[in-house]
Image (cartoon, rainbow, N blue to C red):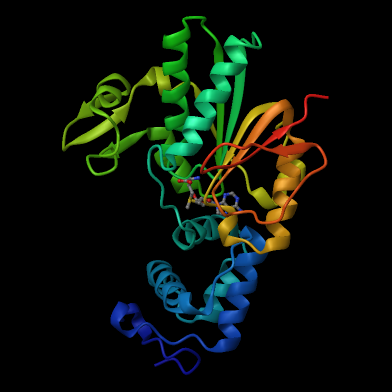
Length: 293
Ligand SMILES: C[S@@+](CC[C@H](N)C(=O)[O-])C[C@H]1O[C@@H](n2cnc3c(N)ncnc32)[C@H](O)[C@@H]1O
């Protein structure tokens, strides 16, 4: 046994004997994770952290938490190693059309922009897009609006996330039967191609409309996104401290075009206001519109 963490040597341990992380080590991991991703890891999630870190330690042959802690920060492979680990520590749960009222709002807003204001191009950003269900849902919605109005409006969607593996899955656009369960038969037929083993691939026309990229929302000041008509950011801010949520939405607000909207997850931002934004009175949503002048 190793005296520092009680990890049996030789990699022959299994998840039943995941070694206990002491308080000091847990705080170091908490701080590293929050510093790099913004995510707060509550004490109740300690066993999740231990299991995730241990699984990875076993894969790369590290014997102690301390040794692995150094490995994700130093040396030529630190960046890659961190990328792998962070994918396992972040919550990537998502669904197609996850919060229907928010999509209803986007649909009504877009139709009014096109038919009442004569707009012929709409740019949207899905922030924290996970494995792609959110931007593909927006893409289906926009395509349906185009089919309905028949005006050939240009729709561009940028979808960003911190996790590289999540982005790879998003780019591939292949989903299991379970994942597409909430999608209507009509949409499934129009926007997905059946594959073997009951999988479904997003059709190329829809996939090609979306540009996926890695963006850490803690580094928004370095990101050249601007003049957006729609910013859709849901189920990401909930993992952050209040001051950080405010900081991020303040920066997102600055990226909106005049008259653009920012759609957040219900309850994700309390007591927040911005001098250039107005809250939209749309039922069961948390959304803001940037003033036109
Ligand atoms: C729970 S998912 C939400 C997915 C989707 N927006 C939805 O509502 O269904 C949260 C996503 O945020 C991403 N994430 C976490 N921290 C991030 C950060 N600092 N920058 C960008 N994305 C981050 C995670 O990788 C994950 O894919």
